[in-house]
Image (cartoon, rainbow, N blue to C red; front, side, top):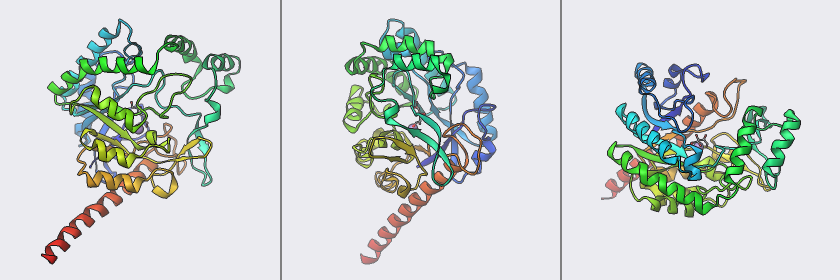
Length: 364
Ligand code: DNO
Ligand code: MN
C-alpha cells in the first residue's frame, strides 16, 4: 500500500507540502490543476511547475485526481470528440512527468453531493452530512426557483452563480437514461484507454457519491454489479477503479470487502474512509475508525492486505477537528489521524502474516 495525500495546490490549500511530508509513510501528493475547467487541455508549463514543487518537497506526483470529464462527453453530444482530444493530450502530458494513475468520475453535473458541509457532531467536530429528505423527491427546477427567491436556502454546488448553468444542464439531461450514460462512457473509454495503455497510465474511475440517482439524473458507478459491468466495457489493466469506501459505503447493501477481493487487480487507487449511515438513509462522514461508522475499515484494510495490494491509497475526507479552518472534508488533522489508523491496521496484518509464516517454519 503506497500512501498519498490529496493536495489542492499552492494558494488553494491551507496545508503545505512540508506538513504533508511529515505525516508518517506519505510518499506522494494526489493533485490536479483545479482551476482548469473540465474539457480543457492542461498546459504543460503548469504541470512542470507542480513537478518542481513536488520534487522540492520530496513527494512524488504519481496520482492525479481528477482530470474532469466535460459534460458533453457524458451527454454524448457531437462536440465530445473535441473534448476527448483535449483529454488525450492531457494524458500524454501527464505521462511526461511520470504520472501513473488518473482518477476521474462520470457523474452527471455534480461530483459528491452533501446537504451540509459543517454538521456538528456530539464531540463538537463538524463533518460533511447528507440529508436524504432534503434531496429525494425534489424537483430540481423547483429547487432552483426556491433558491433564486431565498438565497439562504442554497446548498453546496448550488451557489447563485451556478444556478443558471445548472438549469440548462438539468434540461440537457432530461432524456438521458442510464443506458445512454453507459454508452457514452463506453465511447469515452474506447478512445482514451488505448492512449493510457501506450503511456503507462492506469485510468481509475471514482464511484458516484452518493451511489444512487439524485434529482432524476442517471448514476451508474454505484454497486459491485455495475463495477463489474464497467470493467467489462473495456477489458484492460489500464481501465481501473478508484475504490472509494466512503462513497460506496453510503449504501449499506454494498459489500466493499467483496469488491476488493473480486476486483483486486483492477484497483490502482484506494480511497479509504468511513461514513455512518442512519436508518432513514441520511449519512455523515466520521473518523476512519471502524467503530465510529458503518463501514468495516478493519475488514477493508485486511482485504487489501490479503490480496497483496501494492497500489496507491489515500484517506479521502476527514472531519474538521481541533478548530481547524480548512476546505470542507480536507483538513490536515483528521486525515492524518486516518492515515495512522490505516497504517496501524496494515502493519499489524503485516506482522501477523510474518508470524504465521515463522510459525509454519517452526512446525516444519
Ligand atoms: C469523494 C471524493 C471525490 C472525488 C472525485 C473524483 O469521495 O473522493 O471528491 O475526488 O469524485 O473525481
Ligand atoms: Mn473518494
